[in-house]
Every structure is written in structure tokens, then in C-alpha cells.
Image 1: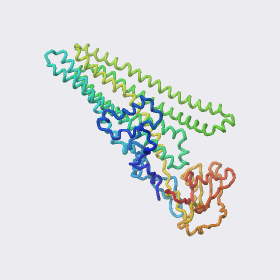
Image 2: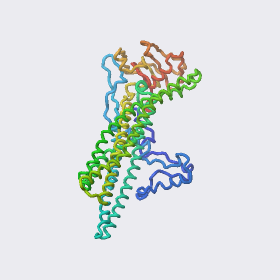
Image 3: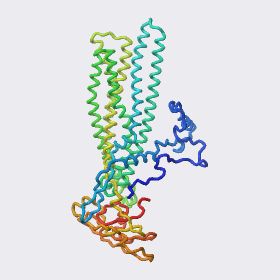
Image 4: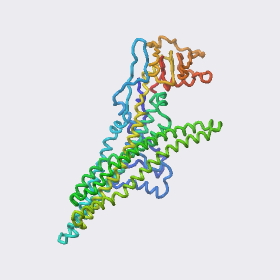
Length: 550
């Protein structure tokens, strides 16, 4: 059989992309970003100049006026990487669609179990971690500044040193600043590129899973609003956490080196300021945990609100006809008030983080220099300037710590939310469908479908079975050429007033025949089509559809 997703469109393979025909090409068409540019142009971002010029002229009216995405960042290339990873993933046991037999136990077909973090690591790990090298270079050049500043101030105070030392210190400070600026600029740029790929991957995975999963299980586990938030809010949080990850390992490095340099300048007096900073760490962690809890509760209300808004818009005609506007408006506003309540709590905690960010530098400086003077030391210009530069470097990571924890916490919540969707079992066509006999497009043989419960729940209550039909061609007669009406043998029942069941459906559709399905309202016509599309649960019987791989 052919697994769903194995046959992909031509543009879903690497090397394929959309291009403009020459006769339709705008003379101001920018082409593909960074394509054909020199290393120096990429280093200095000179390749962006044509885009900036169009912006100055006011020619940026729609997306066609922008650069096209490079091939490695295009959706077809990313989709190809996703499919390649999924095919290489180990198979797990599935228990949604099984075909029962009177003489043998149910067979459980294999299914792919996708781990979001493993997929992102496999597809973009080397790019993501390589970009972290630019962050490391930027941090290292930042330490050079205070050291050279100390040398430069000492050179100014010491009149005996030659002028070449002054030029050397100034030149090295300029060079270190220049290298650091290039490193952090390219870190931010390439982090945005990797984030774009991750966003496309997350959205593609959500689309793929919703198309490949059982509609019954999908509707039971998730609402429309949740799936929309997976592709918007949750994907944004995961992308925004990418820089936070590199900042998370960068903070201990900056703190360790900065504290060592402060010790060389101030001795043990620096512990007074550092002690105050250490006290802030558990406070910041507490704030980050509270922000994570409030974010989770806020997203629950947001999911419900988006779902209700979608249902309201889809049924707006019925709502207006029955004058239900006030009722739906009150319900939506009540959900919005709950969402605002937790959003308000988050913003108050954010304001507290800003307060610590604003007051920490002043308090650390006062405590550090006050302790240094009280123990009997004399402050000089070289010590003050160097220590202030180091304290400013120390304050930055400490202030960033709660924001980093907040971003990583929210991203982890979003990863777990999306992973719930990815853990759903894919529909296995090999166990649901059979091949129809020669001359037929569709055939149902003693097929039974249900909608409100999954296969496992029904099998645990009652295990209906059907004998397998090993040779369908031997059972069915040859196709008839006469235009005759073929009745569909079926039975519609309700079990416990909850489970809607279509029992023992039998139908044969010959190739090239145009047929219609007639029946009363609620008789199961739409469910019959859902059964052919594998959108509801098959209990037993045979469903045969031709050309599934096309």
C-alpha cells in the first residue's frame, strides 16, 4: 500500500520553487534574497540596499515587492525535510483502526509518533547551534572592552608610557567593538532565519497532523480554537524562545567572567553587590513560574474564545434569525474577561520585572563601592571606570534572566500543547481500505460505521466481527453495462441514545457510473460519504476505494 504523504507534489521536493515568467516579470523585481551576492555584500548586508531604496520611493505595496525566500527557507524544502524525518522515524503501535477477524486477534498497524523537539533538532539543530557561535564571539569581545579601558585609563595617568600604547589600546577597543557588532548583528539575522524555518515547520506539522488523523479522535481531543492557536500564538512563542535559549547558556558565562574581573579590581568587596544580585535570582524564578501558570490559564480561555468566535461566524445567519446576538455576545465577553484577568496578572508581573531591571544597577553600584571604601580602600579613576563597565555587564545578564526564564517557560508550555496533537495516531489506509475488484471504483461489504466513540471503546463493549473476503473478484459478478438502480443495503441504529451507527452497508459502484444517494434527512447520507473518506470510525466490514495513491 501507499502511506499517506508518500506521494508529494513536484513543488514539495528540494530544488523546486516558484519563478516569475519573463513576460510577467516586474522590472523592479528583486529576485531571491542573497542569491548571487558576494561574501562582502552578505557581511555588510549590502544586498538589502535595493529593498531599502524601494521603501524610500514608497514602492512597497504588497508582498511581491519583497525578496523571494531562498530555497533552503522555502516551505517546499522544509516540507521535504519533515517528510524525510518522518519516514526515518521508528514505528509505534496504533490502536484506532483495526480489522477484526473471527479466528485471529486484531492486528495493530504501525504509525509514526512525531516528537516536535526531536524533529526540530534533527532538521535545524546544526544551524541553530552554529548560530550560537556568533553569540559566543559577541560575548567574548564584550569582555575585551573593560580590560582595554583599564589599560587606557592607566596609560593616561602614567605619563611615562609611549604614545604607541595609547594608539594600540584605542585601536584594539575599536576592533573589538566592530567584531562584536558584526557578530551580534549576524546572530540576530540568522536567528530570525532559523526562527522562520521553525515557524514553517510547526505550522506544516499542525496542518499535516489534522489531515492525517482520524476526524473522530481529532474532534474529541481538540477544538477549532486550539488548532488555530497552535499555528499562531504557540508557534510564535516557540520561535521567540530561540534567542532565549542561547541567552540562557550565555548568562552563566558572562557572570563567571565578569565576577572574576570584578574580583581582580575590587577584591572581596564585589561580593556585596553580587550578594544582592543573587538574592534576586529566586525572586525572578518565582516571578517566572507565576507568569508560566498565568500564561497556561490565559491560553485556556483564549482557546475557548477563539472556538466560540469561529462557531459564531459560521452560524451567524441562524444567530441573527433567532435573535441570539446578546446571548453569544455575553458568552464571548465572559471568556474575554477571564482571558484579560490572567493577562492583567502577567502584565503586573512584567512591571515588577521592569522595576528590578531599573533599580538593580544603582543598588549594586552603591553596595559595591560603599563596601570597597568602608574596608579602607581608595577609589581611583582606573578602578571606578573599569568596575562600572564590569557592573554594567553584570547587570545585563541578571536583568535578562527573568525574561529568558519567562520565554522558555512559555515555549515549553506551547511545545507540550502542540505535542498533544502530534501524539494522535495517523490514519493507516492499509487497514481501513482494501482494493476494489476489477471494474469497480467503490465497494462496501458488510461495513459498519460509528461516530461518537472510537474503535477501542466499542471493541471493549462488544467485538463484532466479519469474515475476511480474500477474493473479491470471485464474490462480485462482472460489471453490468445496463443503467439499473442498485439499492444500498443498510441499517441505521442508535445505541444508548448516544452512539449513531450505520450497520451492514453494501454497495458496489462501477467505473464510470454517475450515482446519487437519496434518503430522508438524518438517514446517514453524509455519514456514508464520511465513511468512504475515513472521517468516521469503521467497526468492521470492507471499504474498497480505487486509486487511493493518486
